[in-house]
Length: 450
Image 1 (cartoon, rainbow, N blue to C red):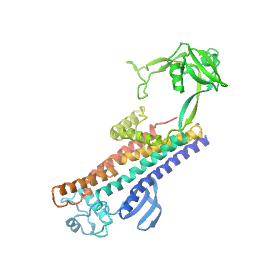
Image 2: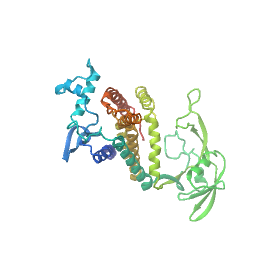
Image 3: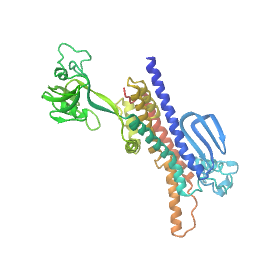
Image 4: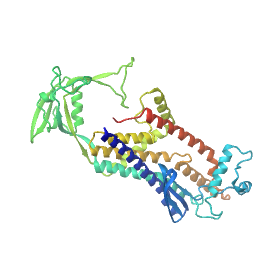
């Protein structure tokens, strides 16, 4: 018990460290191009809350904060400076905003005041908002792209370095009998029928080379014929000690629940599970890791981007469904969203499982890679304060400037994204609410691999 608890804790810690590395790389993706383009960066921080360590190198303070669940860099002049008349109207940084004030107007003015503090002078050139559009887009894309590249590296290690678990045509074990699935025991009883594979003389180490006269290369082909032949005699050609042998057997018919394409059990009009008869012979196959081509890692990352995008664009609906399952105790969608608590729990379960070490390492790498794909997709959502929102603002600024140039009009003022602070506030509140629902669901109605 102590060993499994310790392994679970190690798994959670590894996920936290992996998340911190992912965040560090994300912020590095912003930092490097920002400095390359001459933007003054005041801070590069991993985490939130109180600072536990920091060091200033040049004009930038690098450090770690107490809660490693996020990060940021502070760039000078993320937004244009406050209008001159507004600045004069609020000496000493008094809260003002639009005529009549109000909560959102105050928020806009506070955002402008905070932004103005990053500007040395009105002529300061080392600021973000004065960069050409493509440079601003490169800076904001840098973070998500780093997460995608990290995911590609992790998937490459997983698929090309470790490999994919593949069922071979080599027999690993042969059962003595067929025990009913609902028997609740593992020992053979007097009434249990002899396993067809054992009765036919199948032995561990046999390599199946043909079924019913058709050559096979994977165990899936063998398994398909066996399942589709309940109570029907089949012949298998196996290779044993370098010599072929032909074995005949009749798979025993057993009931199996019918599932749909999503893996859910199909039920009839009365709600009872629909079953079908399938054949079994009582043998297991050997499983080994087969290394994939080097391009398998990028392909897997791109495939995951598509899958995660489908979840992200339906996030409010998915979170609502998760909330319903939380309060009703219903089964959660295994392909639904997770909070960092749920990801940590899965990482702990992977580490504490009885699987071989290599399997656990592979499970952790897959989880961390998928998490980075989620960070990539999520940060590209075109809403502030996410990176995608800043990209949209930069592109809109570029469109305005191009329009003015085409029609020979005076250059427009830079787009003032501080006016979108009320929208940003609503987005942040929505994200906090959805995050809270997912955390509660991951605590009280978690997804599990065990």
